[in-house]
Amino acid sequence: MNVEPGAYWPCVARLLSGEPCAGSCSAAKSVSVIPPMNFAGSYVGFDASASTEPSCGSSTVDFPGVEGVRLTQRAYPQGNLAAHLLGYVAEINDKELAARKNKGYKAGDEIGKSGIEAAYEDDLRGSPGIEQLEVDARGRVLRTIASKPPVTGNDVKLTVDIDIQKLAEDSLDRGLKAARVANDRERLKHFLAPAGAVVVLDPHDGSVLALASNPTYDPAKFIGGITLTDFAASTRPARRSS
Image: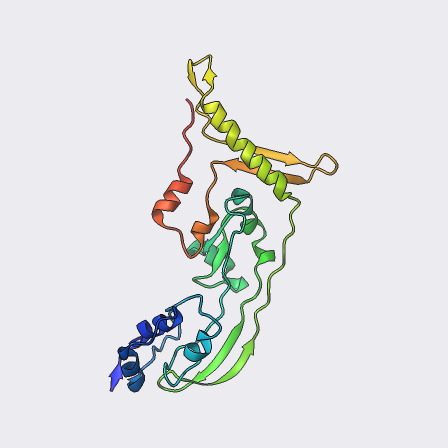
């Protein structure tokens, strides 16, 4: 008896989330599953515990074609702090891919779109790992022919002082809010104060200690792809006085 690829994926997802295996799971184990032939794979669960991965991800008998894979996950422990300075990453587009294809980029890769992420893309990006497999007619892996481990990219150390950066952003935000309730004596109305920026330089060597911009945005929303609504909100021009 054959079933479509992914027939037992819901069961695998339940196991990864710590839920008990349902009756349909044992039924899925007993059938012969034809795996997909494109080898692209699909993710059915994330944040698997160390105890779950061996029992589910490595069980080719119970779940043929299922494999546990370690992925990197981007995090912003400081939240919105220095968002414009650091920039964000997103999936590479056709124009960027055409310009960088000879550097090993492929469709689906993430690339720096703005800020430090874009300016130092070549330094931050490492080299992806490569694994060449031999499979049978049903797509089952028989052996590994060759493999090349990934190479981590370089670290980039900035001159920005996180405490000064936070002070600059907080002061800028308070200043804009104060300006919006202050009176413009020439126009007889409150200042619009839609946006502002702050640059703090070290007087000894001219290095940048803080670079603040307001309005700001949440770079975490770009992780895994930003929604159209959030993207439109983050790129909407600030209102300016005429």
